[in-house]
Length: 602
Picture 1 (cartoon, rainbow, N blue to C red):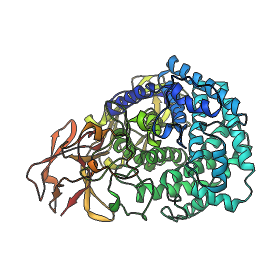
Picture 2 (cartoon, rainbow, N blue to C red):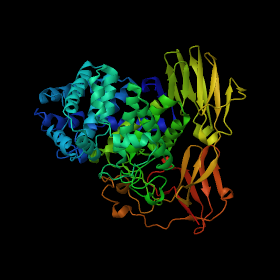
Picture 3 (cartoon, rainbow, N blue to C red):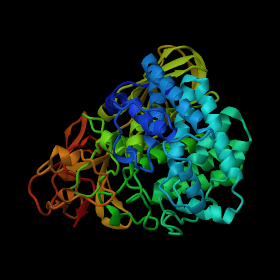
């Protein structure tokens, strides 16, 4: 991947979200986030520094996880902007967290006592201490990578040493396997291996291997889907499982053992092709409750935990680095356009826990500083990480995975390239070599939704006989300043149906999932931006009671009219129970209004 330091998002909804997210990140109070860490380390706390709420409150077993996300988000913000104030804030946090780590004396760093970790290691019970430790550990690593602060590296090494000691004490692998099946360890093994890639301390590899759930990896490696099995109540927890396979692909990258690559590939196939919705989201109430291709029973308001999509994008990008296959980029595009960019409130920066797809429901954006849910933390990260998914490099080849207005500084080649035009409005992307001269292979993804009509022009001349390989066309030449590449990306309206219920259909326009706008009757801002994650059930006021429109059987192509050629908006009028047309809009753009993605066709 290119670092986000080398990529700038220039315009469109991604740039808008990035700015909204940075504002939300800046509104967090570092000392309030440090408060629980200082108390746990026995250090003084300013009486005027009030405790945080929700999952960061003093009694929460998950307190401290937001600090990890915050460190990562600030690290990305600094890489994007280069602002000295952001670097200063990162260095302050590292300095203060180091004081806490020194006071605790064992290398351990968290906002709750180390005894909670000991208890969970023995029983598997307790609310996710390893999940929280992973976020903090990775945040410290990201801080070092962004700022080269040697204190951050020292802290990461001591956290690693603490985990090595813990792993060395594990000898009864049968009991430990049961503990892993019960507890939520997050991506702790990925962070251990991320530290190895910096330090090359081989003890870290042995420690990481102790955190693999082989009773998930082995079936996946042999293409057996057991993801909804209930070996324990947590075994089918989606956001516990996905990081296992991010850890697997990292293990493959370091060790070269194909078992881990096969497991990650097959798992990705199981989730994206058989357990995901058209938006790229997966899971219901955080779990996989049914077998493959059983999607219709879970079109509710507890669908699509945002953390899951965040992690599936990470896994997809990692797998792309191994396989160079456009299918991974096709998924990332689907997930970014139809879930992630719709998961942040356009005024407040509040983010979604579940991404509601129940017909007639509306998105809810939990008040970030009231709740501090897991998806609050990943929400802070999501919108400053877009640049990771756009461009990739391999030797002399540049892979263009996303058609998003952006600029790229390819330092190895001395090339600066801009991607102009918003494909959502112009149905094309234009690349211009702004600086430099070099021979290179530019590999353009042919999106799944426009393979028949995909065209490329270089300096105005159409390229003939372009034959995609693994979903890419290859342009090899000497690139000089001023050279242009135009990519035609014609979008078509398409209708699809759920695999287990052909009467439930949805509409797509190019990469966009479209939703019907059903108005805002009965909706208040407090309902749209609540302090409720819907985990304990849908609040009474959010239960859908309106009468839903249903479609007539048969062709509907003549009953959908595009409002403007430059906007992906349509009027749909093919109903069996209403006479007025319904406006179809990109799902991501609808906020504060009832929506319908999945239509019942009589």
